[in-house]
Length: 498
Ligand code: KIV
Ligand code: ZN
Image 1: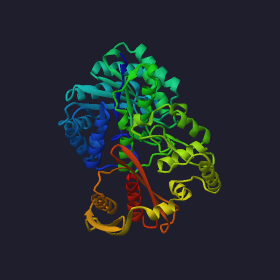
Image 2: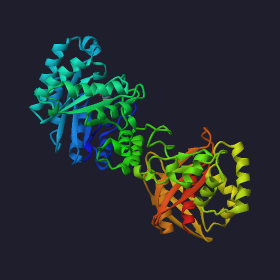
Image 3: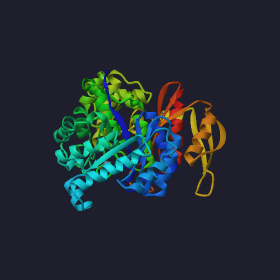
Image 4: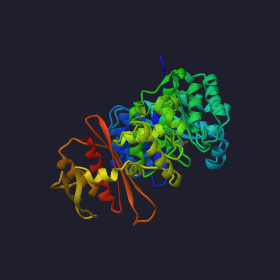
């Protein structure tokens, strides 16, 4: 049987320490519920003594989620521990995470203490926390730069005092993978009572080593990993949950399992990115916009022949519908034909050769060729005029003091129908009106607004992806008014349902 690696998510604590990423309690509950769906084992919900908001979040998250253990951070300070215990009182299973710095830097310059005194404070904190909860995790802050012999003494002492999980943070992201792996191995081999606790990794990404270090830790005996969604966290961030989970899932030979429902990864990433107002870099592993997108002709051709030629992960396993093909001057005929097919056009033989030539000419003068360009190439201007569903008029009411509403008039084969609806914004209101006009169950799966250039008076491009009876349809429009562009793109996709 595979070894279980416990997933400890600290997006709501270490992740939330990022400037500008603060969430209110309602938003934190939304993230916590999604983390529960994702299948994490432990949610670090906050640092209760740090602010009334953090205290309240730990209380409310404890009430809102059922299965994961709820963890609260403290320093090795009695008052911190009391406040954390109070915040956790509604948790079905609560954990206090207490600790102190153990490196030369922390002991001498931050705590102005000495090694023996630090061990004593660590023992006292763990014993005190055990008065309130059975599950106490101890962190040896800056363990990454703590010499192994002393670290082993600290770990032995806190396990003896009742710690159930021992966190070995590479607080400054200093370690190299072999070094961090050896540190965990040293503890496994030199702490006599190590079998009485679980060793945990907590790696920061200052040298871009966080995922590698975490996996090295697991390979040498750690059975809990402390991670965040999208790798959010102090400075360069923490280990990204999605990277560790998918590395373990892809490398069955490692013989570990996490219990994470990987199909929830993209959804969780997007939720965290949106709520924390922290965009995910396009080339981010697993959850970046380009993670499953192929742009060179050779790769596109390879992927279309067999996805596994250039992909180690089936996008569906992380909740991404399909790989995407970005058309550039390096794309081949196969990729163009595929994209045109997705847009509803079939080109073969000579016709395909002709449109491919036009495409190459256009691609030479443009960086990326988008769907709107392809539609134009495929003669869709005519098709658009012929289209049976068309936006006639749109009027929206929105602002800070009114409930957003929209009145939409759409013509179906020349007959015009009007509908008014409200929503949580003008686009939502307009889409609701469109849905009731078309009388179809249309599920909006993707919605992307992009400014073509940076000026506020410029064109906005809107791409939508909708699902109807298990099939996907794409819509596009560009307009100086992004609400109009959104409704046109939505109708464009609906019109393709036929
Ligand atoms: O990076 C770190 O050392 C921490 C501890 C507080 C666990 O976040
Ligand atoms: Zn940290």
